[in-house]
Length: 233
Ligand SMILES: O=c1[nH]cnc2c1ncn2[C@H]1C[C@H](O)[C@@H](COP(=O)(O)OP(=O)(O)O)O1
Image (cartoon, rainbow, N blue to C red; front, side, top):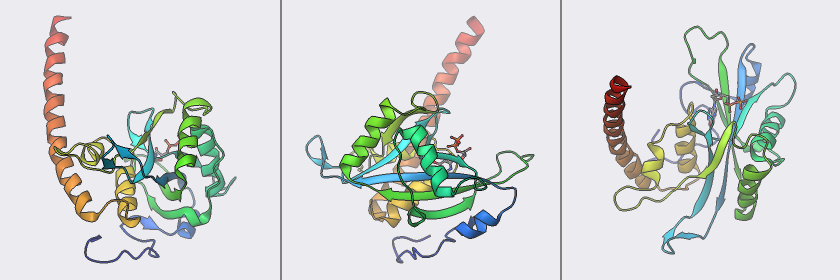
């Protein structure tokens, strides 16, 4: 995909291999379905009183230590994709958030989790714009009334969309580990909704790759530390 050179055809639902329309996805017999949503808002807030934050995008730290969007498995034989997603959001965010078909962005096959897995998983992705105050309400509820808080969801996080001198911000965030295709859902959405300029995103991703190399070195260093201790105790 070339976001910098050509305008995105937002009507096209088949952006990348593995993608299918909502109708095709629902016609898949024996497939499992998971729906997730990116909630976001505009903001005038400034970090340190000088770095414009511009937009708030919500993600969550999951129970498995990976970053992902709120949502979960739905059963289309018992509920619509959107009502299933709203049900999952009530558990994870502690709020009943209506999600409509208009919020649907794309559906795609997830890579098989293991060669022996019998049913394919289709992930459906939604995006919903809110007011800044509504986002704050979601964050408050997620940390107080949500049934899943501290269990399946360890906490909500905001995506830093700025890049600081030295690469802190978006570049560091993108170098974390994400569940499934959540990183690419995030990046595609930032481009499609013009939340980050393609040039900035390219810079952040390039830096992120370098950060990733440092992370590997850091991990190797602490692995060596545990190797020594393992032999002692
Ligand atoms: O944010 C996501 N983006 C794409 N795929 C995702 C995301 N989060 C999870 N997934 C995939 C991989 C998971 O195994 C399934 C089910 O999602 P999950 O949120 O873990 O579902 P339950 O809470 O267990 O219902 O979807």
